[in-house]
Image 1 (tube, rainbow, N blue to C red):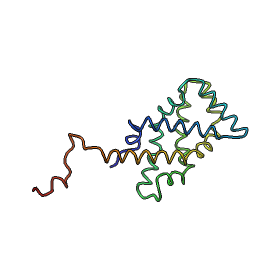
Image 2 (image 1 turned 90 degrees about the vertical axis):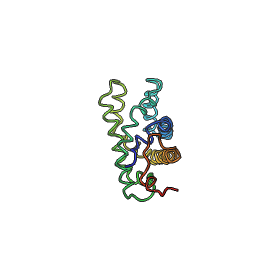
Image 3 (image 1 turned 180 degrees about the horizontal axis):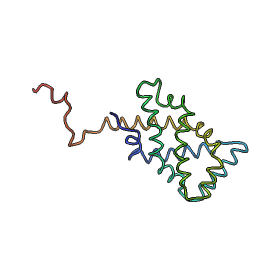
Image 4 (image 1 turned 135 degrees about the vertical axis):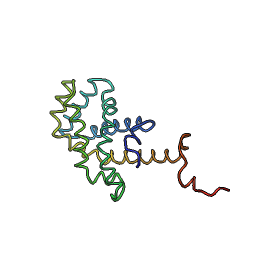
Length: 175
């Protein structure tokens, strides 16, 4: 059985880069918003970012494993016979993936002790899904890229010293 997404990209050295890229993705999504609703989103985001320095990276760090766990069933379905790339598979299911990811933040918001943040989240939750769906393509490509990098690093790494030889290696003819 292959490693989970948490075990592949939710651990060093990938984790730090995934968190950084998730924060940049959020910043980019917010910056791209226009119109009155965009102004509202930008205002909420600015409030949250000034509420506590480093708040966004700390939230992404705290929620990353839960988000990856929510992506895992989609990855498993894709791996079991999905077509195209994993990113394409996720993008084609953006609506469901967005709900899965938002279920994590919904639970966190319910437990939050930060009244201002909780109220802002609750007030803006109805529009959050649209915003998450819009971010899914970039998120899916980023996750896929890190999965590929993780797999390449694992394939290039020497086996652990305590690794047992494979059956093929023990059945190989001795010369």
